Image (cartoon, rainbow, N blue to C red; front, side, top):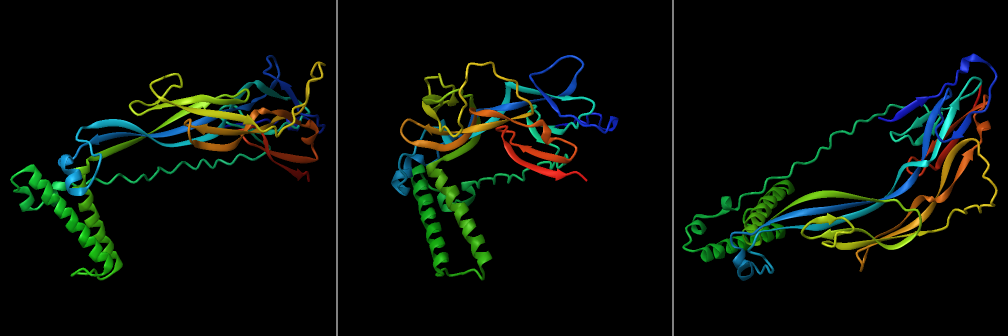
Length: 354
C-alpha cells in the first residue's frame, strides 16, 4: 500500500497565502509536516538460473548405437545452468537527501503522495485507488509427462534382453517419425479431414516420440530460481566482480572462489554538469527538492563475452535542484509527477484557479 499524505495546511483559517516552507533533514518539535526522501541509485542484477536434475534413461547405454545420441550419461546428476541476466536501476531512500515540508497557517500546502519507502512520487495529484490487484497469474500447470511404457507393444515388452528391447523401441521411434512425415506430406493412408484433426494426430505422435526418446536420452527436470544482486555505486568502476556462478552451487557470493566470476563496469557519461564548489558555505535552498540524475553505461561480462550493455540513470552522477515555493500559490494548482526510481521530474502541469 502506498503512503498517501494530504497536507491541508489549515486552508480555511485565512484568505492570505504564504509560501510552502521546506527544510533539509528531519526536524523535531512543534512543527507539523511531511518528511520525504530522494532516492539514490542501486544497480540491480536479476539472475535466473535453472537447477537441473538429470535422471538417465533405461536405455542410456544404447543411445548412441540406435539413435545416434552422443554424450548421454548413464549416471544421475544435479547441476545448475545460467538462464538469463537482466540489469536495471532501483531507487532506495538516500539518508543524506531527506526533506521536511512544513505545514502551517496561511500556507497552501501541497497534496503529496509517497511510496512505501517514503520517496516522493507526486504533488497535487488526486489519489486514484487503482489498486488493481494483480490478477492471480494464470500460470499454466506443467503438463504431466507421458509414461513411455504406456506405448510399448507386446513384442517390445516380451524382448529377451535389454539390448533387444532398446533396439525395438528405437524402431518404434523411427516408425513414429515416418508416420509424422507421411501426415505432413499428405501421403498417410488415413489422412485427417481438417487441420484440427491433423494437429491432434501430430500432437499425439510427438508425445509418443518424446516419451520413448527419453528412455535413451534421460529426463531433465528443471526448476527455475531467481537471484538478485544489488550494488550501490558512488563512483565509476571497471571489471569489478558482481557475482560468481558455479555449476554445482548456482549463484554464489562474489568472494566465493567456488564460482566463475562475472564482471561489471560502470562509466559516468557526464550528461549532467556538476557545479564547482566555490569554497563558500553552501546556501540553504528553498523549495521542493528533486534529482537531476546522470546517465551511466553499464557493462556485464563473463570475462569473454558481454551479457549486458546499456545506459541507466544514476542519481549519484547528477545534482539536486528545487521547485520554487512560489509555484504553489493561490492562483493556480501545480501538479508535479516524479520518477520514484530516480527522484527526477517526469511532468509538471498547471491548473489555473477559478
